[in-house]
Image (cartoon, rainbow, N blue to C red; front, side):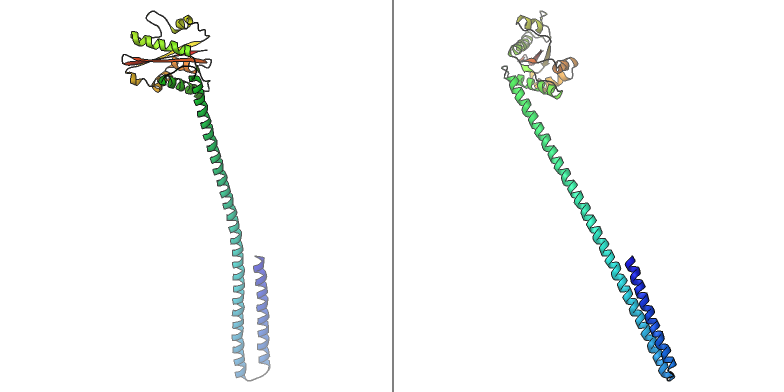
Amino acid sequence: MFRYKNKIIAFSLVILLVLVSLGSVSFSTKVSKVSSSFACTTSVAISTGKTQVVEAIADLTVKALTADIVGTIEDNLKTETVEIYKVRQAEEKARAEAEALAQKQAAEAKAKAKAKAETEAAQSKATAAGANLNGLEAEILKLINKVRADHGLSQLQIVQSLTDIARTRCSDMVSRGYFSHYTPEGTTFFNIMRNAGIGWANAGENLGNATPASYGSPSAFINAWMNSASHRDNMLRGHYRLIGVGIADGGGRRVITTIFLN
């Protein structure tokens, strides 16, 4: 803005000086007492010259002001361009950092999920190694331990002696056509464990029956137990450490027994 004022003042002074100079020429011409025709011609010429000078000065002034304005606009544009570039750089940097963080978090989550799956597989393999289980029994054990893991509980260790009792219970129910925690004689799994010399502080038994047998998938039994308060409690008791799993098919049905112990 100061540049505009300085140039305007400078050009105004030039205009004044020119006008004063032209005025002096006109005055001198009139005093010289030359013929009126010459004075008229000279006056016209001076007037014309004066107009041309004023127009030239005005043109120069406009050009100078225009150049100054254009220069200022260009400077402002350069400044704005630099600021926009800086903003875009900051946005791109922030976007790149966010993407890198998201990728890192996704990789960490994937690694944790993989580690968890490997741990669960190793634990299931280790617990299953403690007894001779068939495919359905092993799957039941795996699903129960998965449910416990999802609730922050320890894995149950399979025990052969408990598995033998569970299988005996299933076979007895299938062969004699009943389904109960009590045998027709009133015997329970507590009596059977005591007779086998197995001691315990706490124990529980879950039973399952499916007709036809094809309805009795491991996941179907687990879902049914999770929807029953007493069966769910047995699976999720934190003080249980040991388990036995038995399954028997016969008579168009499938019976399963799980025994929990600590």
